[in-house]
Length: 240
Image 1 (cartoon, rainbow, N blue to C red):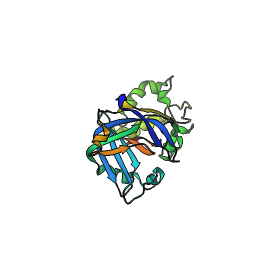
Image 2: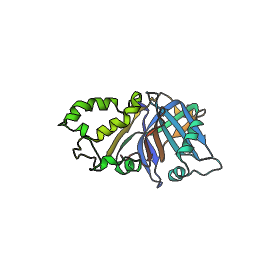
Image 3: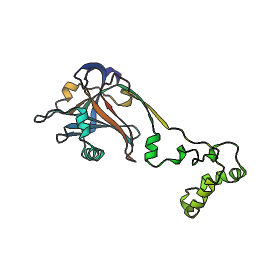
Image 4: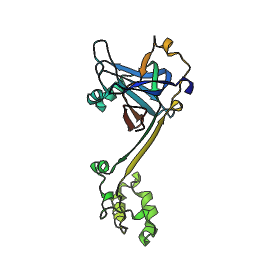
C-alpha cells in the first residue's frame, strides 16, 4: 500500500547515503537468520504460488562484524543458498524494501555456445527451411507432419529418420547472428501485499528485514528450480 512507503536512507557500499522510497510489508514469511554465513534471507511469494522472490542481505551479530555484500556473495554458492532455503521457517517478519526499476540486456550468443547450441550460428550448418516462405515440394508435403511427429514419444523409432528428412530440406542460408536478452522489472507496492501495521510495535516480536543497504535478490520458479532473474542492488535510486 503506497501510504506506508517512506523516503528513508539507503547506505551505499561507499558509506554514502541516498534517500529512496522504502516500502513496508509485514506478515508471516519464510525467513532465516544465519550467523554462520553472516546473513539473513526472506522469501516473498508471488500470487501464482510457483514463483518466489528471495532477498539476501548481510547481517551483523553480537560477536561477528557485519560483512559487505561482495564478501557475502563470494562465500556463498547456489548449493549453500539452496541449503539456507531448506532451513527457512515461516515467521512474523517486518520488511522494508526499496521501490526499484531494473533494466538490463545481455548477448546470449557465447552462453548458448558454451551450452552446446552452436549450429544455429553457423551459416553452413543452420537450417531454418521450415521457417522460411517459398516452401519446396518436400516442405509442402512434409513440414506439418514432421513438426507434429518429431520428438513424439510414441514415435521414437522414427525420430532419427524424421530429423534426417529435416536436414535434407534446402538450406535457405538463414542463420542466427546473435541472441539478445532484455529485461525490465518494476518492484513497487503492487508487487507485494503491504498491510497496516506500526513497525515499532511489531518489532518486539518480529524479525526485521530492512533492505536499507546493499542486498542481493533472485526470483525462482519453485516447480522447476530455475532462477529466472537475479541482481545485486548497491543503489536502488539508479535503474540498472
